[in-house]
Length: 236
Image 1 (cartoon, rainbow, N blue to C red):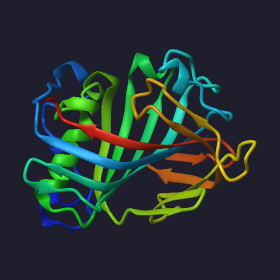
Image 2 (image 1 turned 135 degrees about the vertical axis):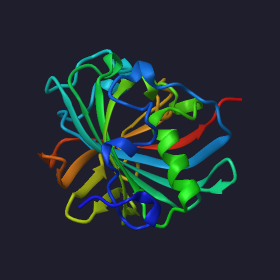
Image 3 (image 1 turned 90 degrees about the horizontal axis):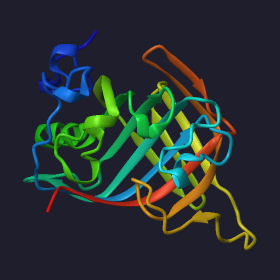
């Protein structure tokens, strides 16, 4: 049963309390409110595209290989803040469902915020990931049409050698592995891209990777993965 997020426990927000009453299903109602924030760390994901996802080099103009996109994403924050709230060391998980080309929007997104986050950090991360805080993620105000849920959860992230993993109870159990290049000690990397995550994207492939939440049951094992260092910030 959903509980008020102000309790500080793992809880799912009712529709009436999602991020802000203005962050409703219509992205035109969501407005950016430029804020001082920054995040450095790593984002990695696993989607349902055949290896490798064409969205990286086409900047979302090419359709996903399966016609739609189903993905989980993980954000490991090595250093960060939202106004006066410290974000360092926090983990965030995301589910994203996109009906066609990424650049055409209509994304549906669920957010899982580390249960260790303070209330200001929790609210700040929701504003960053909704695009409301402006800056690097400000484009989400137009791309994300519906935030289907926001929860405090135990979000565990694994980063070991060429492998990455996201574990959120039984809801997300996802692992990916870098694709080795001609030099097996170095993975395949798309460098100097204009991708929204960051310019250098490591190609990866899903290992055992399953999602079971919000009525979605996805098996992304063997599908496309990406790993990218991120350096995001609010507007100057």
